[in-house]
Image: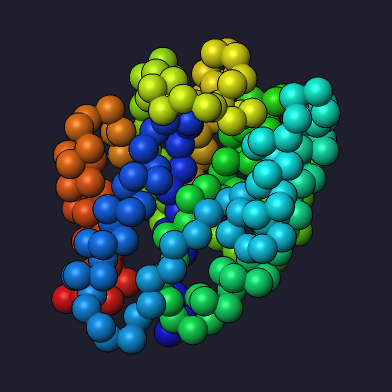
Length: 217
């Protein structure tokens, strides 16, 4: 049986990383040791090459200006390596993958946020993924100001997190548009509630999909 790719998406400070950790533990407990491996990964940075690209994309010297198109292509390179070297092999073995960001982030950030051509981005995503799409995308939606306040509390924001407020507003609208366009695979989760409530909401959604996929009864 082919595995499942579950992607967590959202603006900065939406709680993706926190929720992935919580859901990973919950899934391991729920599914037990039936041979199904749960893999946690991220973009950028899910491979050895990706780790270097992540450093360039998020933590490069502010004086070394990175053009918007160069940024787009670096994300595509990270994704192509990630899909070929990690995602597809694990899916072929029937494993379940929890991925922090995927193609929707490129549409939202580089398309809506940076204003790059959406048609070109779609074509580039198809090349990088070889047609791979998530089985489920969980969009953790929070107001932009709330998300950025969380980032500020954490401190040491990266290059993307330090972008201006209007950029992040455009990114959120990008995710909203994607959710309206792809309701068959994108499920909105309010990320503005307390952490445990968000976790329970995600667990409820995932339980429904695990039954639908015949992974549990």
